[in-house]
Length: 279
Length: 75
Image 1 (cartoon, rainbow over the protein chains, first blue to last red):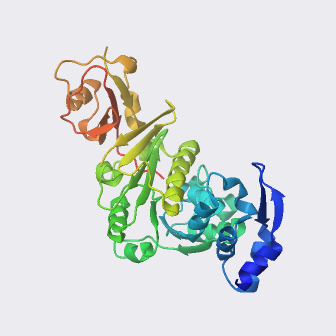
Image 2: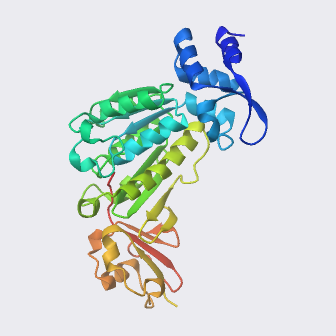
Image 3: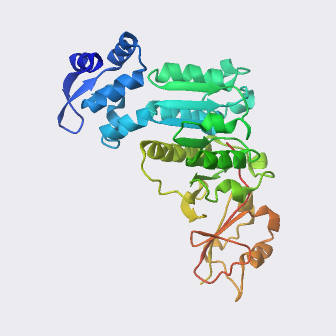
């Protein structure tokens, strides 16, 4: 048995779990301590603990919705997300809390005042700062166990393949329609599924595009999008990001998505949700 | 009985009051419906009938659930 496993066992403690069983847990402080002592990421400590049947306390309320093995696989998985604006900021928050192990992000933009209505990473004090810097600070503050990488750049069809390399899921959290098709094609080229979403006013959609399938980017065109007049209110952004996050987590674990080849079309004015077959 | 109609984002302003029972004529297509509603044809990019994407020439009949969606890309 490895020294790390012995140390995890020694620092774990038994509690009554929320659903009544007895179980062993490992607290955040001990994960950080073991990560430093053994020179590994916190997520490596957490994965090891889960495989020993010991639950990291910070993820306890994910279970029994995510089994210990699901949680371990999520911590092993890499997500590549393009865009750290409205959708990307909320997605980052959810993925960090859920325990997505490796998060790679890209955005070349800086925060401006008109972002404050919806972009989770934007604050009055952070105006003018790069979105990747603010994202890195949030990641370190919220879940230092996660391996976080950020590229302060707008990616192109030339740089996307490297960015997606080694990742299990691509995430289209871009604003506007002009670059979404490039990302969809790059994800297909990398052979990985892409989770996409967009909104305007009270309406939006979420899709899961498997390599080679038709996706929303094939349908929506590249310009004249409705958000230019209707804007992006916070409830719509947060709702679409939450739906995307559910599929990113599911695919990261390795489960198939019920949204593959479909779009979930939502309207918060009519409170209507409908799943449409598009592939 | 007519169709049940949903119009999204910038198309919501074209939604008729009788959207939940909107009359259709024999041979009605998505294209003729869009024209009747007064929408510019290029403003509709995703059309679906009974939860399946269709094209402008798809026929629609009484009892169908029809959705019309414009280009949307905000994040």
